[in-house]
Every structure is written in C-alpha cells, then in structure tokens.
Amino acid sequence: MGELIQLPLKAPLRRNALVAKPWEFRKAHWESSHFVQMLREVADRWEDELGFPDLAEGRSVGDLPPHFTLKGGVGYTIRGMCGLRGEEGRMREAYYLVGLLDCLINQVNPILRTDILRDLYRKVFELKDLLQFHWYGPLDQVLLPIDRVLHDASVYRAALNRAATMKELYQRIREGTDTMFDILGRRYVFYCPRVGPMHHE
Image (cartoon, rainbow, N blue to C red; front, top):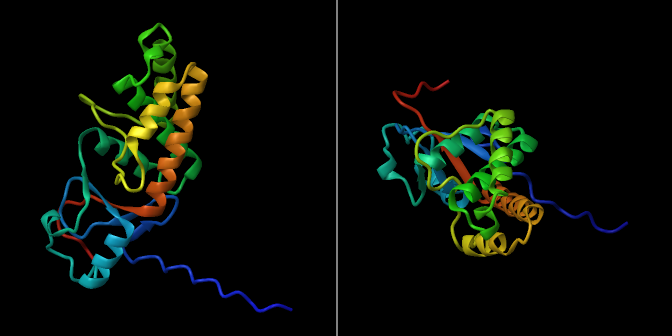
C-alpha cells in the first residue's frame, strides 16, 4: 500500500456564518442597511485580527477593510440571491436571470436592436415570475462586482457582442454567469445588513 495522502482539513464554519455554500452569507456586526461583499481572504484575516464577532460590536462600515457596498441594482440582486441561499440550482438560475437582465439593460449585442429583443424580454419576465426575483427603480448595474484580477468583464461583454444568434447569446450568458457564480462563491463572502443592536445567543 502506498502512503496515505493527508488532505487539508476543511475550515470550520465561522460563528457568524448563516450558510457556507454555494455562496457564504455572514451576519454583520455593524449597523448597515446594505449588504457588503468582501474578498474571503480579506474578511477572514480581518475577523481573525479583530477577534470577530465579539469585538466587532459598535463598528461601522467605515471601519471595514476594502469591500463593495451593494446598493441600487446590485443591492436588489444580492437580496434576491440571499433569499435563495443554500439552493444552488435556483441560485444559478437566478444569476443567469441577472445576466439576461444585464444584457437587456446594456444591449451589448447588435441583434438586440431588432424584433428579437422581445424574446429576451419574455425570457426575463418568465424567470422573474418563476423565481420571485425582483428589482425596482431605475437600473444600471445588476451583475455583482468582481475584482478585475479575478474576472475581466470586458472579455465577457466582447463574447456576448460576438454572438450571431439568440441561441448563441443565451449560451454565452449562461457560461459567463456560471463562471461569475463560481468566482463569487469561492472568492467572496457577503455580510447581511442589520439595523439596531445585535443580540448574542
């Protein structure tokens, strides 16, 4: 028999984690009305240095290390994704919907200037109803931010722009949103907003 390969132990679930997969959502121990998205290694190092969550009470968003505060269109996106947390299949389908809506908002392909645009509208509204996933108000950005070193958004947009048919466009959106979904799950954590004092259990 060969030697046993020692596999690294899985990191224990953080005390403030609501769910670990496919995306990790954590309780914030500062008052905020917005979700915060942070690189996993930055969040873990900061929490460990701070003695989180015990010493984090009374902190503010201004005390946080580099992060994205999710407002507007991306705020509605992360609220919807959090509502589906732990359900990977539905979350992936929802992020595909986010990609379709982004395509609709930004019209990144010339074929969307034709009557075919109606097919995209129909698909978006069908998925919104199916998943009970909604955005409100004027929208500009709905895809969650990803640091450029991890994902080049211009490459994704160029791939969408080259699609010659709606079938090809849908396929490229699916591939692109699946890639983004995996990066967001592996490399980021999401802190859920809270208002008022935190009661420790």
